[in-house]
Length: 276
Image (cartoon, rainbow, N blue to C red):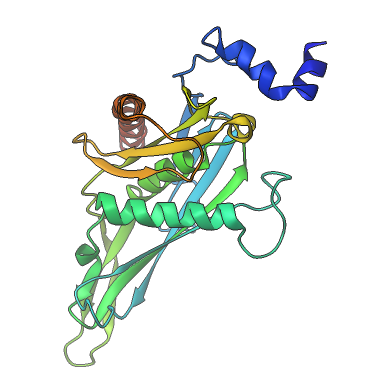
């Protein structure tokens, strides 16, 4: 009977749970799904990570290549993110060119990289005006169940911390790059941005880490990106119902707590890898 009611009146079904300050999956309104991260998942990539947020599963692989620095910034490299949401991960996506949601996710990650200064592009320059690194950050969603932005941001941070770049020098006589694969260095990760997403129900009720079903029923969503210093790096609000200043402050407070949880988790995983 409950299953039939959920099918016929899904929003009313959710409202009955929300009135009791809980959700159909048993979580409290401010509770995240179980989060796990695996670093170094792809051996052919220069850095990689797999993140699971409940059922939502995203893998990020990073490949580093040489490029000429841009003409307007001869001392900088490039970071190029791309999010792929294939039909494999959900029936809502179709084969072909990236859809609107995938493009929006790619732009979100690009904005996070730029605004948070997770990596300074100057650090990717090898030889001023001659050679720089370009980092291709490819995200593939293996299983989609909502909150793709949090999962992608976490996977990006974990994968970047896994990158080891070889030492590169320019031969003065030939002008060619010489790569020393035996001597590698990690990237200089300057900030640790963490995204926290919320769904808004009936313009007033906030729930954290929404599932795909909750996103569909919500009147709006908002994603807050914070760094370890409590600095607000980005606010992503793609339309929908508005938020009061008090509600936005509640989101920021929860995002600060979430940052500590994610940072603790990633530090624990990296430490376990180094021990091995």
